[in-house]
Amino acid sequence: MKPFLMFEDRDFEVREEFFGYEEDLVKDLGLDVVYGAIYKEDETIWRVFKTATLDSVVDKEAILYRQDALKDALFNKDLIKRLYELSKKCLDEERRVFFGFFRKYPDVILYSSIKRIEISIKYIESIMKELKKYSNDLHSKAFLGLVKRLDENFETQYLKELQKHLNGLGFKDEIVIGCTLSKGLNFTDQKLLKRVSSKKGWFEKILHKRDRDFIYCINPKDESGERIISDIKNRGINRVADTLFKTANHLRGFIKSLRDELAFYVGAINLEEILRELKCDITYPKVFPPSKRVEEFKGLKDTTLVLTKKSGVVSNDLLANDKDLFIITGANKGGKTSFVRALGVAQIFTQCGLFVTAKECKLNICQKIFTHFKKEEDSTLKSGKFDEELKRLNLIVDRLKPNSLMIFNESFSSTNEAEASLIAQEIIQALIDKRVKVFFVTHMYSFANSFYSKEAKNCIYLRAQRGDDGKRSYKITVSSPQPTSYASDIYLKVFGK
Image (tube, rainbow, N blue to C red):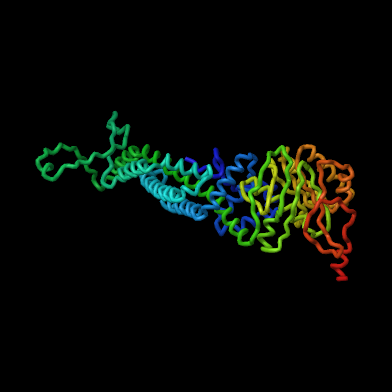
């Protein structure tokens, strides 16, 4: 029994550890701002959302499957939140009766497993009841499939029969163990037997001839006798205890998977509510295969900037299909970093089935997503800044695949421009030759002009706009690179006129 709310045919596994380049991706794109805004002090939502955003889905049908599930979740917010709370409560309550330290004792395993199963059944019934209330409002394959599987695996009659067996295993009065006497009067083949209770009336009991019983009573002071009886009992219930333990774990595994997968949709609901409150446009992007080159959007905003600045965030438009290289130049603090961060987050959100902060959006799927942003100086002085940049790039190159996305932001600026331009040219050309889509933010005119002069059709050149008075519009438009560093801006900033 699986929830299958994230994938149609496989489990969603929450990761606890991430690679260094993935942590760089989170920091560079400001994804920790997103996690912090939506998690509501719930660590499960944080871990699940981080896993989902960093484990990009590369299959178009899988992305659409999750998009449809998210539309269901946003239309039925109360249901999703209620199901999530039920699954959390179930795990918390079940955890309190799990006697992990005493697992070597079959009777303890038996009793705790029965209790755990009863708790799981109680909450599964509640979950099924909630889903049936909203059955007419669910349309996605993910949630309709969940309803169907719950009905098939936990129909009412089955649950009643299971509860009946659990009640019979309660052993409130006595335990009946069957066994065989072997040589030396040793007990073997111990088995738990079903107790047959007599339902005769009192008058019938008086007239009924009593059967002869052979009873042996253990003296309370006979410790060895007690140990023998305890051993017989434990051997007799061991197989049943093991079966119930596995059943309890199976039910717990289902509830845990359900909680984790619901956590993604609860996080998405939290994010959607924040963005709606900030009056930010959202849309479900149209996705294209990795072999295509599609980069088309209207009103795209930097999600992390929206969450921190709250208002006044400038959006950008772009229509640049069939392009492998995007070189972005222009004035400092003109919105270049925000622009590439916006498209990086949009790509990640697209490939985990989320909406993006734009009016319209079309993107091709990327096999892998990487960032290489300029870092601060190494405070430990273990390596130079340029050396550190190359080491980070080397970790990324080892994991690159064709049709991946690579975003550079002021990379290689720690050395002189002539040397940095030559290094960047060779690296970027090698990436393009390997069918990697590249966004490159830079102040190096010689580097930008080296590609511009080739007039390659698979390259496009963007520039951050700056007015004659030095004011920034934070708009990024298609424009050729210019050989200027706007030193006058620095002069005005320092001297004020």
